Image: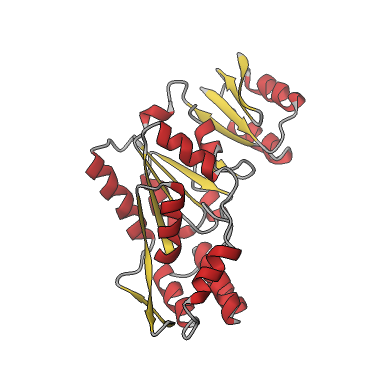
Length: 277
C-alpha cells in the first residue's frame, strides 16, 4: 500500500517522520506539494492524528491503482468545483442572504431534506431580476484551486466528466463550456418577464438524482462499478460519493468527511490526480 501525502507545504521533516511511522520503503515526489510513501504499512489512526496536526492530507492508495483505470468523473459544483454557494450569493443580491444561508447550511449538514430546503430558498428569491445571475457569475464566482489542472488531467487520461449540482443550470452550463465537461445536470430556475418566479422547473436535483446521474453515465459508457470517481462536500453528495468507486470529500462538511475514505482538506482539486498519477 502507498500513502499519498499532500498539502499547501510539506516539510521534509514531516515526510521523514511519516515514513518512519509507517515503515515506508521510500519517498517518491509527485509534485512540489504531493509525495508518495512507497510500501507504507497502514496505521490509520496515528497517520490521521499526525496529518491533522500538521495540516496535511493523507490517503492510502493501492500500489496498482492508476488514473487510466477510471472512465468517469462526476463532481458537485457549489463549494466543490467553485468557492461559493450560488444561491447564497443570489440571496445576497436580493437582500435575504442570512435567511437563505441558514437553510443552506442546515441542508449541507444533513439536518434538512434537500428538496424542501431548495424550494424554501428559491421562494425567497421571487422577483429577483434575471441579471442577478450574470452578476454572481461574473463578479463573485471563482474556481476552487486546482480545478483547471484537474480537468486537463482527466481529459488527457480519456475520462468522461460530468458536473451535477443541486444548484442552477445558468451556472453549470457556463462552467461546462468553460472547463470542457462532457455534460452538466442541475435545476432550472423559472423566469418570467425577466424576473425569477421563486420556483424551479421540473424535479429537484437532490441526493438521489446525483447518484442516478453517476449510474446513468457509468452504464451509458459501459464502465464497471470500480471505474468511477466522484467529488463533493455536502450531505446532498453522500449517495453519489458512496456509489462511486472513489468518493472524494473536498473541504467537506464533517458528516461527509466522516463517510469518505478519501478526503482533501488542504490540497486543491488537482490533488485527486495526485492520488493515482
